[in-house]
Length: 168
Image (cartoon, rainbow, N blue to C red; front, top):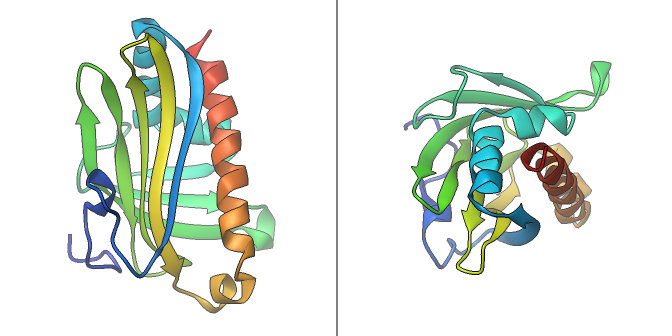
């Protein structure tokens, strides 16, 4: 995927995360059982989780698929921030469902973010976000230490939203 603005494509799929970036790994419990995993995976891979959390999403396809374009937007009116991305990997295993997207030119950050629902051996279902990023614009460079704070608040919001969607 040549239009990504960073070289470590697929870096959220393996450990350790690439050096030279801010790393983020957050886990949020969302429920119990296979039905919760299935509902959570559906909400993640169809971008319903993002939309229900108030994030604007324009996607090439109704479901995340490697190579698919996604434009994420946050804010309102002239303060809306647009962030072009591309899906770099998906997972649809018995106990894990999700995807990761990477940033493209024009995104205020440079890096990758993965969203995965996981059914653990004790029956609990967790939403995991793993990311590596660094500023790619004057806006994010100027925001400095506020960017990771915003990311954590956003992930908390996604977790609450996914918990609600998966436990209906």
